[in-house]
Length: 203
Image (tube, rainbow, N blue to C red; front, side, top):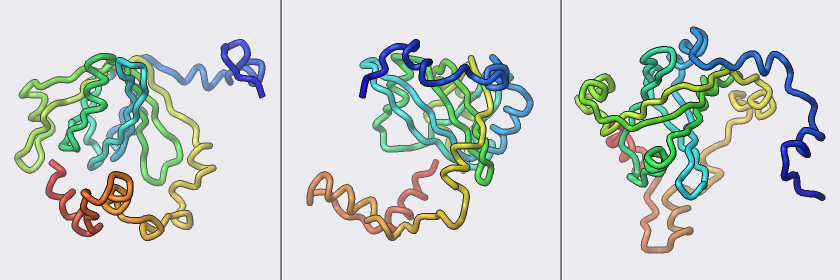
């Protein structure tokens, strides 16, 4: 087996991109993109650190949690998390990000690539206030590429098919897995307790 190390080598294994796949890319958000974002309760954001290491982080909330400022600007609230700040640290050193928006039950995905910045403007943070609490920061993304991704990956995985649902009981609890990984000094928090704690930390 030989390593593929150039674009020329890569292309020998694949044909040219389909015309529609090329033409669908836009440099700003189309009205269908905007509607997709308004309906989406979940996205994954990719970023790259100063060391060149890539990272992907999930973001989720009620549909519409990402605000479309205009057809080239998105705003994403940064809700309370574990304070690792992997994505935020990466954005400070390298603004390039990729976003995948998903809709439960819909097999197409919206891909948005752009440059991000971190904002603490009071007026911007206030737009995302929930239960009297504002996000500490807002990730503002300046759109450079946007396009709808075809349904094949989600169709192959049958991600939304109820018959493929994985019962949570097939895995240990998060607390148990962390205890096994880190050591006995980590408490194996029961699943119900973890869920109750998460709900108090949403905003």
